[in-house]
Image 1 (tube, rainbow, N blue to C red):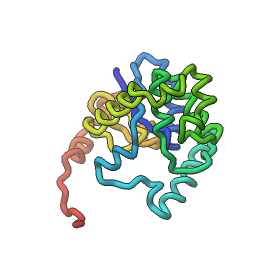
Image 2 (cartoon, one colour):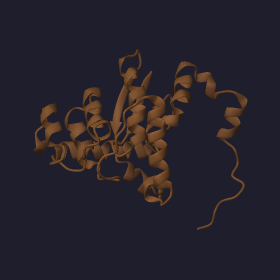
Image 3 (cartoon, helix red, strand yellow):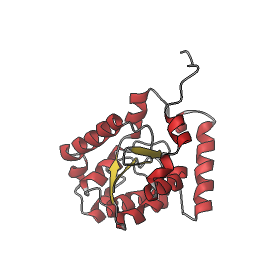
Length: 208
C-alpha cells in the first residue's frame, strides 16, 4: 500500500502525528512524507486556520499541549506562532524529505521549541543535515514545495496532517486510529452507513 502523509511544520498536530507515522516508514507499506504549505491550502479553500481565529487559537494551543501530555510526547512551542514555515519546509526538501530530515526539523521546532521561520534561525540544523544555506532558498526546493502543495490541493487535501491512501483521506492527529483501522481493513469504509454519509444531501447552505 502506498501512503502519502501531507504535513506542514507550522502544525503542532502534524508533529504529534509524526510520532505515530514514523513506524509506518519502517513497515511493509510505502509511506511518503509530503511537505506542503498549509496556508496555501487554506487560501485555496477560502478558509482561516485555527491560529487566525481569536479564542480558537488559545483553545487549539491548550488542546495540543493536553494531547501531547496524554500521548507522552514532549512538545514545546516555538518563540512565536503562527510563524512563516517556508524555510523549514524548503530545508526538509533540500535534505531529501527523508524520515530523518522530517524528524530533525520537527524536533528542532516542536521538541526543542526553537525558531524555524528563517534560514538564519535554521542554520545550525541545516549544517547538521548537510544542507548549504543557499540550497534552502534555491529554486529546486522552492519548485518542489510548490509542486507538492499544488498536487495536494488538486488531490483534495483540506488540512494537515492528512494520511492518504487507496483514494481515502484521514485528517488530523485524532483520526490516526481511524486511518490505521482502514489500512488494516478497507471494509471499514464500505458498510452501508459509511457509504450513505459519503453522499448525504446538503439541506441548507450558509449565505455569505
